[in-house]
Length: 202
View (cartoon, rainbow, N blue to C red):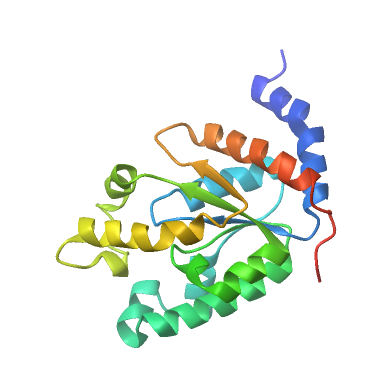
């Protein structure tokens, strides 16, 4: 008897092949707050589509030879943001791929403009309780190392959500199986990609 998961993958392959073909050389760029699931969901989305997954934060750390908290500590946030923008611009030349970006990356107007040309942006939108529950045990979030992390998170959400709302697609990140969210992203991408030329701007 054939493996059901394998059979389902085979059955869905033509639709996903056409979606990747329509993507051309563009990237699927995941944006959203820390804790929204960009890396975990992005990895599964990339496997589903058969394209690479790239985490911009990992690439930034590799380029700098330092962790992100170390960059913040040694050089400050403006230095980090400038490097982040450069790394994302470089990565956007390498599509197709699923590219997970840091929480503040989409706040940069130049980055948003570049993503609009070289990618399809997907906002993983999560509410405060979900985000707080996911990140409270993490120690690698420099912007939340404050006396009141909950208030800081709320302030960041208020600042960033209007910018995230400029993304091409918004999908709710919630306590649901990752595959469910992946399915919703794919379902949302299909009409977007059917109305956008498959050739990437170069």
